[in-house]
Length: 396
Ligand SMILES: Cc1cc2nc3c(=O)[nH]c(=O)nc-3n(C[C@H](O)[C@H](O)[C@H](O)COP(=O)(O)OP(=O)(O)OC[C@H]3O[C@@H](n4cnc5c(N)ncnc54)[C@H](O)[C@@H]3O)c2cc1C
Image (cartoon, rainbow, N blue to C red; front, top):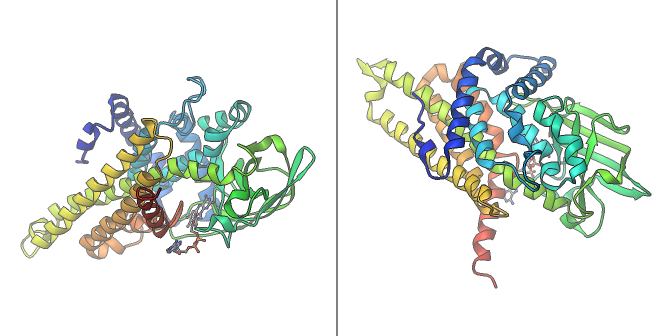
């Protein structure tokens, strides 16, 4: 039986507990619709259709409204990060691809939610919330992944427009997105201080998908090319030169949710393992009775609880009004993704041959967790962020 004791922690309130119960219930009743997405054998063409279908399903279920600010609510009302985390954790537990589709709606539209004008929010966010429009976040380039200051895509002012030229790689939802938030060099200052953010419809002339990229846990991913792509200046998000801030503030929110997804994968691995070791007979007794199994199970439980504490601490701090949660989010992402990898590796080991059998849940989780330690800032990058924040406390 899944652990729900953390729902009583003071980071969460009654509305979060209700949300979690409703989503659990929905995932149970929608399991047939979520399950096909877990079959790793599916080809790329099918994968696109599955992802479009999942976005629609999540929209119809009413879950995607949590990926954008409440448009009807108070002006300035932001995303509820604890809800985002609970939703990602729960979706990841049931289906990695459903979590991916949910997450990308939030990440892709995050720069609009956080820095868009009222007109920009009204134009782009309702489709995200309903599932009628698919979002993508285009920051990385082949030579600029961890090093955002190396971004080479340029946006040059031409009257009331900007002309974009360059390439973005490793872009999730490339090919199925209806719009992209894009970061390009506008040159106000050197390095990361000379970037600006834009929002572009996928059918903007001059924007195309040049390649699709296959990964160990497939999802739509590819490279975008901008060739004299003409974008009205009113499609800039925030101010000229504010692009790095837009990207980092968006990642501040969504890094914590990556940690939550890792937590969901780890919880699933742990629950599957517990059921297995209690059932599996070895040397005349359940595998669970061997002390080395108990050590592995204890480590898994500890890794999960420490990750959950960091995830919900970070989300709670953001929701409580802390402007930036860079340190908390970095700690949550670093710890939860690294520990989820460990939890899942132990699960694979305890399943023995079954654990590496294609299509087995442990094998699927083993592939699904890996990229989370790399994207939205690799683990080493999170360590640098944490260390810099530690130094700041002693700097004048
Ligand atoms: C599945 C997937 C989906 C993605 N989706 C998106 C997306 O939707 N939008 C987007 O913009 N990008 C996306 N990315 C790109 C992702 O953000 C980058 O891959 C990531 O930032 C790492 O950049 P890189 O691949 O260029 O690796 P590099 O920057 O070349 O880094 C390679 C390795 O070097 C090490 N390293 C990095 N920095 C340091 C440091 N300071 N000190 C020590 N070691 C270090 C790390 O181990 C790192 O993994 C995605 C990537 C993947 C794998």
